[in-house]
Image (tube, one colour):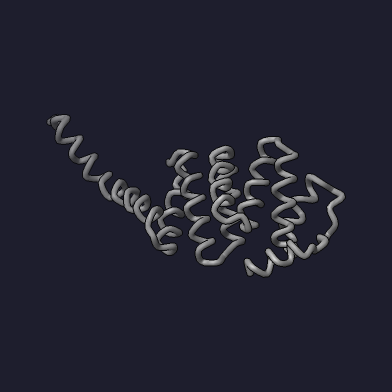
Length: 172
């Protein structure tokens, strides 16, 4: 006995409905106004290899923003870097430029944009942004190491200027 095509389609859709609902829930959570939900929802999208690179990169940025809101800057930087690695370099650069415009003392944004510039082969802009990140957060070994990769003569510690010390103290 042969089943009608419409019946087969109903069975397939019914079986797929929970997966589709979970995916939709993940997107809603990833965009929610709650860092815990952002992290959970965005993580599901990032780990779903069936998602496009674009969607996974956007989820990396969303999760990075949630980690930053929670004060976990190391995880935020890792996610921002992950977004860059997923082929969203220029979009990431635009996003970090917006963050810098809104918060010119955001060392993480300068660092992430510097990494993106470097990934795209724009060494001068990368050095400029990484130098600014180090000036804003002079005791960050990760930021100093990234700058040293492009500019080997960078000292292991930076010279603290009154302006950089003032900006550091204002942001911490």
